[in-house]
Length: 144
Image 1 (tube, helix red, strand yellow):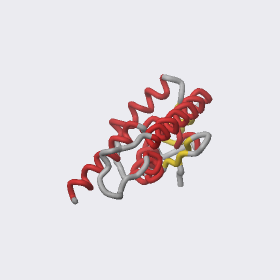
Image 2 (spheres, one colour):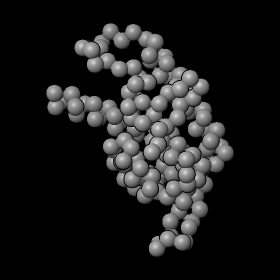
Image 3 (cartoon, helix red, strand yellow):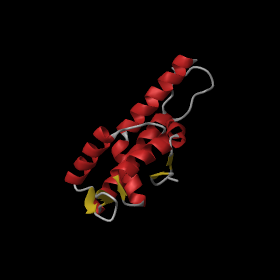
Image 4 (tube, one colour):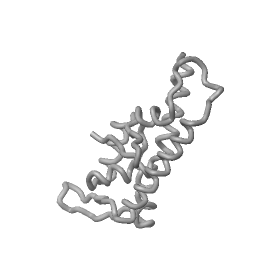
């Protein structure tokens, strides 16, 4: 039983890491944030900790690609770089949400002969349980 829980946690962590750029873009679609806010929100929403050595290089990459814009805010006790979603980032977010929805649908239509027991979930259910819900036209994250 413990082995299954560890395997599920490992799979969840891998999925979250693989979707980290999409997760960050979605967070920034809701509101501009600084890096530490993003790290905290990922941990709160997904139960996985990705530290500064993972998140900040990804933010820099997203900024270089023109998907996010970082601006220094000096109004805090110490300066913070606040990231916001650009129009190119919004376009990429829409595209990746649609692509992920299609992947989930394709996975859901395939028969999985290796499923053991009655605990099988569709890919959409698994993603929905991690804070992402698939919809007919696009995928949106449920961020609280």
